Amino acid sequence: MGSQVKTLFVTAIIAILAVGCGGESDNSLSLQEPWCGNGMCEFGEFCSVCPDDCDCKTLAATPPMGWNSWNRFGCDIDEAMCRETADAMVESGMRDAGYVYLNLDDCWQTDRSRDGTIIADPERFPSGIPALADYVHSRGLKFGLYTCAGTETCQERPGSAGYEEIDARTYAEWEVDYVKVDWCNTEGMDARTQYGIMRDALAASGRPMVFSICNWGYFQPHIWGPYTGHLWRTTGDIADSFVRMLYNFYITQSLPSFAGPGHWNDPDMLEVGNGGMSAEEYRTHFSLWAILAAPLIAGNDLREMSGETRDILLNREVIAVDQDPLGIPGLRVSGSLTGVWARPLAREGARAVVLFNGLWFPAQVKVRWSDVGLAEGEAQVRDLWQHRELGPYDQGYGAQLQPHQSVMLLVTGKEHAPCSGTTYLSDYPWMYAANGEGVVYRDLNTTGHPITLGERAYHKGLGVLASSVILYHLGGRCTSFAADIGIDDEVGEAGTVVFQVLADNELVYDSGLMTGSMEPRSIRVPLDGVHLLKLMVANTGDSLYGDHADWADTTITCQ
Ligand code: GLA
Image 1 (cartoon, protein in one colour):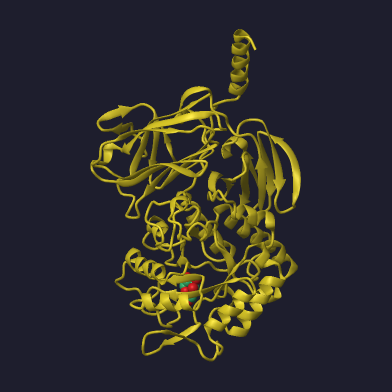
Image 2 (cartoon, helix red, strand yellow; image 1 turned 60 degrees about the vertical axis):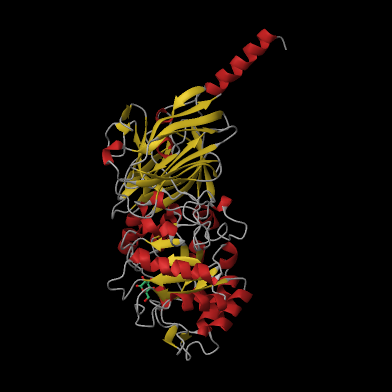
């Protein structure tokens, strides 16, 4: 090719690629990364850089799925029912659909022996817990137990306070895979400290066990939970009623940026199939849990499920949304009591979307592609409850919804493409942006004031409050990312955060601890061939006070 032709050719290619680049979008969505629970990896380490012997890569990388005895059976549990439930999990196809944990809740324990070892109820569990765990394992399932951080459980059985080490060791010996730790009878205790003791005890036991923190959202577990356990309850107990289920959903949906692979918000176990809601309401319950990336822990009697209940719990398309490996919790993109929630999925251009009517009269609910961070144009729409393609739709999709109804969609559209040259990221539409307690600000700090770092005011940048996650689609066309990072001058010396940049989910920059008394830093990160850029600011498990983090003058340079 002659050099003139070559130049023309390259210019034409650049022009073609540049068509449809940039653009405006006012949506917000977001996420967080694989922190490793069980104390196996230190704060801020990612699974991909864990030591060889670290098992955290696979522990709760997606939200745990299984069954728990409490919602349906309360204290009325025994080994025969548990074995039958294990059988039912296999025969119904639940296990193969991903429900692998069989978890005993409160009331399996009655006492402690003289050396402090916990004792199972000899009448209800005459063969002992190890035999039950063996049976559960023999069915290809995993086994979970319940305890309480306090002196007694909520049903006045022996609690773990002061017995954390011996309990963790006992669970490990019994080959327990999942431990739920409640918060009754904890007067005078600090949750972060108390759950930290159990985390360390579980880690010292040497057996990887999913650690489920159940302190009902008290003491802001979403802040310290990611450094303590794999999931934490965000609310009080669910009940088998639409209103109560919705309450738990609304609280949890306000915290997307704190959850991600290895650490999940838990709006409590499922009530699907327990009889207190209509089939339509249970479908909504299941859709809302999946869009949140919530743990799916069934709470009904699996031995006698109706066809309708089966169809809900075994809807593999909805389960696939919940278990999407990108692990980004859904975000409200419009509305409130009727509204739209969405999350980006691992596959390029894919979004899971729930249109939901929480009102008691019919309502029209609509999603625009720009709301979910997609570019203008056509997108394919699939209904995940009807299991059928609805066809291509331009701009967006709307539906008339009955009271309490929801529609769950898989939308596959076009991602934005960055312009060639150097672009401020605050001028480029994100796929998703979630911020500690609100929205990500463009060209302002997280309180809506000018970005100021090291006494320098910046006109461009992104202002966030830890923890926050912002995702951008780069389509493999960019070469580098640059920013000045630090804690905004407006908080003085307050604030403790960690800035992280992930390229296609690989950690490529980690600031380590940055405090308000440190100088800002200029960073430059190579991005060749990267499709997904993730900017994260993590809080450090203390509080969000002063965590006003700035990505100032943030740019990408692309071809
Ligand atoms: C608390 C928990 C429930 C259940 C009961 C058992 O209320 O939040 O999930 O474990 O205790 O007593």
